[in-house]
Each structure stands twice: as C-alpha cells, then as structure tokens.
Length: 152
View 1 (cartoon, rainbow, N blue to C red):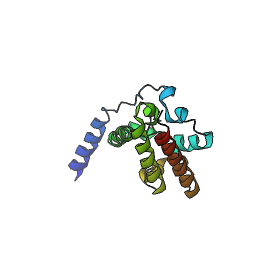
View 2 (cartoon, rainbow, N blue to C red):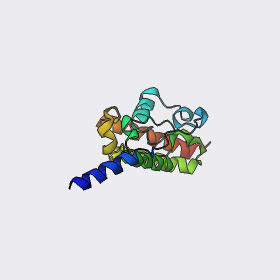
View 3 (cartoon, rainbow, N blue to C red):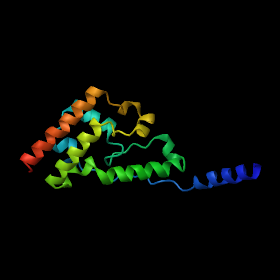
View 4 (cartoon, rainbow, N blue to C red):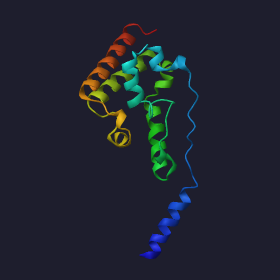
C-alpha cells in the first residue's frame, strides 16, 4: 500500500511540470457581443460574470488552474465553451448562426444548464437568481429576434 501511495505521489508531482497554456486569444472590441449589440450594463455585467470565463477570450484563470490534472480538465472545458459560443468573436458569426446561438443561450440559461453547477462551486458571483435567468433569457431572445429581422 505504501509503495502505491509513493508512486501516486510521484506521478502527481511529475504531472505538475506540464502546465496548461493560459494565454487568452487577442480580443477586438468591435467583434464582441456586448459591444456590437449595445448590451445594457446590468445585463452585460451578468453575462460577464456568468458566461465570459468559458465563452469568451477573456478567461480569468483561478488559482486551481495551476494544479494538474484539474487544470487540464479546466482548459478542455474552456476550449469546448469557446468552440460552442465565443462572445469575443460573435461578430464573425453569420446572422443565422448568431440567432441560433442566442436561442440556445436563452434555453440554457432558462433551464439552468448554464452556468454549469461545477463552475458555480468556485464562482459564487456567477450564480443567477430566477429573476436574473428570466431577464437574461428575455434579452437573448430579444437580440435573437432583432438579428433575424435585421441581420446587418
């Protein structure tokens, strides 16, 4: 048993030498959802607090992003989140895709699928009340309709 613990400890120490890349891609304010959609500040704050760490190029890495294997899981989660929806590059999406992403965002917020429960464990400021969820979902749907009606 002692040998197994020593091997596990050695493996844990060794994997610490393989950190994740915490470099955020460059941002362009003219491509950002909050800017191009003239999002009101109270709603923008909700989106920044609850969405931007995983769904933008403005990730703020927490202390535990320095500990493997947690950091690898975190990095994978962020990469997947950006791939699914990246608010920092929202202007690059075709109008039809923008509308679809907004529809999905509204549904995920309404159904409490986002932000993820695992994210909320370490980010209490990202937790949304039922009223905030409703307000945010309504905002996403409003912008979705505007995008469908006036795609430019």
